[in-house]
Image (cartoon, rainbow, N blue to C red; front, side):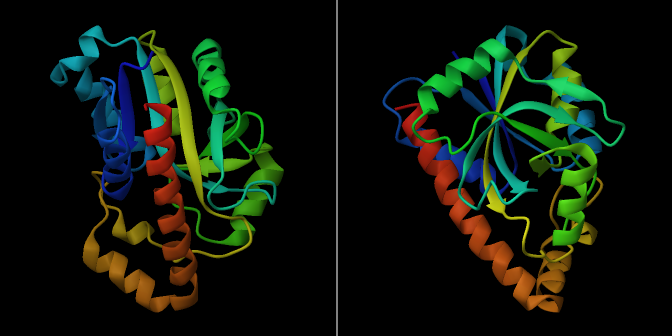
Length: 226
């Protein structure tokens, strides 16, 4: 049913791979992708020529973490996307048939129906900014890659579904780690550490939420492909 999994490089990629390691059946190839709209779009455009698995793939599952924009979604919740929006209000739908198949497999684990996602070109750190996005765009969750993936791969006739886990809620601030994300969509350790040190309370929320989100991401991956 799933030919390829796309997931942000680093801890999210590692969690998905650990979840797949427990599977008894053959599993899809997992491709680590960079963080951010522009880096992932550049990567996917190059990827069309450089990744052999793409030539025979038809269905893609995007996995990873995301942030909540509303009180309806808390840390650890599993969400399936209906569509993604960008700042220009462009609307990029996920494949309905593939999403419904995933929904039927995960119905006992989903807290809410399909969600509307906003894709940001930067990390949304403040609770106030998250709540403003919800009011402006009517979105329920936020990520940094969704619209770029859907825009690029929909044009190539891929069927795409998106499964993510909430790692931060709409009530707490996060440290601003945007300076730690380089032009290639990678987190740089030193700037990230400095950002965490400058905002210790926000860093605590980030660490706790990320650990819970990653644990759930590993678990749902393992259960889905068992």
